[in-house]
Every structure is written in structure tokens, then in C-alpha cells.
Image (tube, rainbow, N blue to C red; front, side):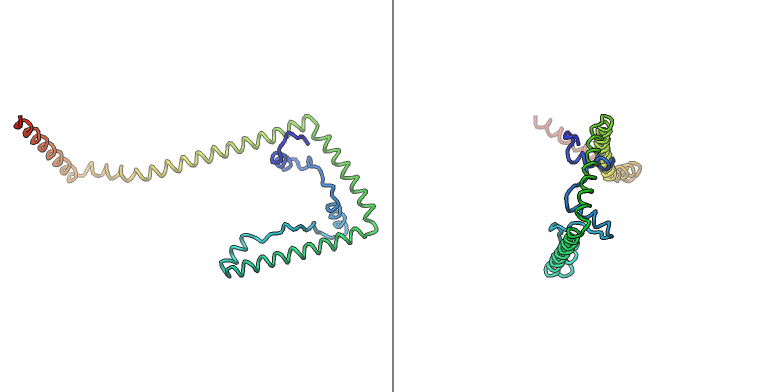
Length: 206
């Protein structure tokens, strides 16, 4: 695979073209394939099983710290059971008389597939397609940002309009209300009389 692509870009490419992703050649996953031939559907158990945060929160509200601790304990038990089950089936597979033959055949099969994939991703047309996938993804993200920004502006504009609209309505109502107009005119006349009085006092002072 082209090293010019980042991990996140490769994930985008593999979503569109899963056939370009190389296969895992580890023993554990070959064992998984072998077990599927014997109608055993299981995956390698790891120590990464963690208590659900949502379950912890719900149990914490319902039963407090003790309930949260109990959930963590149950998760620990599930982890232990999963590891034991995987270990048991792994040992069974490794001891099976057909295991070594299957492992060799499956390893060669995966190696051949990965070689074909390596040749495929080196094809100029495929490289062009991968670059187009990345470009389309970037353009989509930019459009999403623009849409989010536009939506934000609409919300802000709508909020301002709703806050100003009542003032405009009240202003228009007062404009055509005779009592309000008379009060405004009276206030104007009072201000005019007051200004004239102040001006006369200044003139008398001189």
C-alpha cells in the first residue's frame, strides 16, 4: 500500500475498496478460520474488555458505588471466561491432526492474496481511484462544515430577529396609538419650553 496515505486515509479507502486491504497472516486469525471450518465461531479474547461506561452510569445511579463495582467485577468475570474459552479452543485447534496442513495452506493462500493486492494497489488507475476517494471525502467534510456554519448563522439571525421583532411591533403599535402620540407631543412641548426657559435665564444673566 502507498505509504503516502495516512492511516485515516487508508481507512476511508478500505471502506470503499475493502478488496485493497491486505489480510492478517497471524496464527490466531488462521486459527479462527480453521475453527470456522469446524462450526466454531470465536475470536481471540484480549484483556481490552472494559466495563460499559453507560452501564456503569446507570448502575451507579441505581445502586451507587457498590453497583458500579459489581458491574466492573462482572466484566472481569466475562473477560476471564472469554480468555479461558479462547485458550481452550486454540489448544484444540493446535492439537488437531489437520492443523499443520491447514496452517501451511492458509498461510500460502494469504501470502498469494496479499501479493495480488500489492500488485493491484501499484496500478496507476487504482492509485488514481484511491486519490479520488480521499479528495471526495475531504470535499464532503468541507461541505459539511459550510452547512454547519450556514445553519449557525441562520440560528443566530433567527434569534436576533425574534428578539428585535417585539420591539418593532410595539413601536408600530405606539405609532398609531393616539394616546401615545399625544404623550409624545406633550413631552416634546415640555422639552421645548424647558429649553426656552434655560435660554432666557442665560440671557438675563448677561
